[in-house]
Length: 287
Image 1 (cartoon, helix red, strand yellow):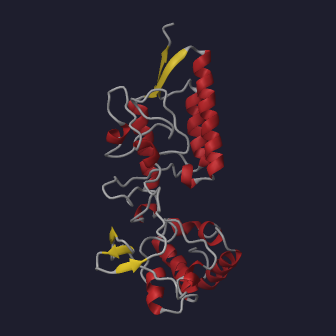
Image 2 (cartoon, one colour):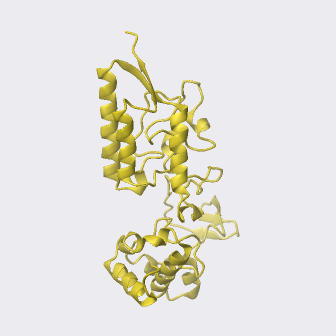
Image 3 (cartoon, one colour):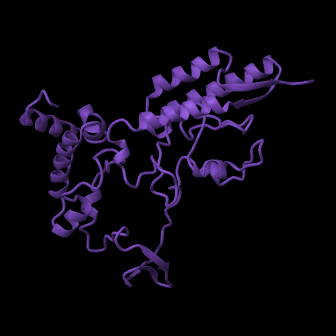
């Protein structure tokens, strides 16, 4: 962006905006995710475009505030059609629950902590926001030391290659913590991990191996690598992001997915397999 003029950048932003979808978010300048000044410029463009669609100044400030709540694009952007127009409908009210949290469910709807009761016909529960780890930690999985994985990860997720965790032998997961998961095309990530696990199980059967578990050393090195990648650029500036886990009170803030891209991740997995599953402790069957 430093080598372009404001006029050139505005034309580029307009082009991406008109194309819709992911183009403005992910098809624009790469500096948006590493340089705060460039990020601010992109946000200002986005804010202007959104505010043009919202007549009410109060709604403008709630939905597209003058001061960005976090770096633009580090949380999922609203890549939408008519989303912002809906808030101007007479049957729609926007309640900012970060300022007036939900206090209780009442007979007629919801009550926020300012004493206001919001009367509803239907209440739709939004679930699943303890993302990435929640699907694993809600199961009482216990390792060789008898400690549950929920307890083990209370002070942060640790894994090796985003497929397994030390002290939990023969346990693999797909599209989970510290894999590319949400930072990649989902089916591509799932296919890659699934094939790697299948090949690993074949290797175990062919070599009479009954147990495989990551070593603490390999797990520590890999997890630190994920954390280091996550600290690059503006991603760490997200304040309530399930990418980082800080949307859940008490959950440790850390990068929960591998942000280095599918090619780099594939190489790490394939290198381990090529070296006889380096980083894992393998035990042969006594039978």
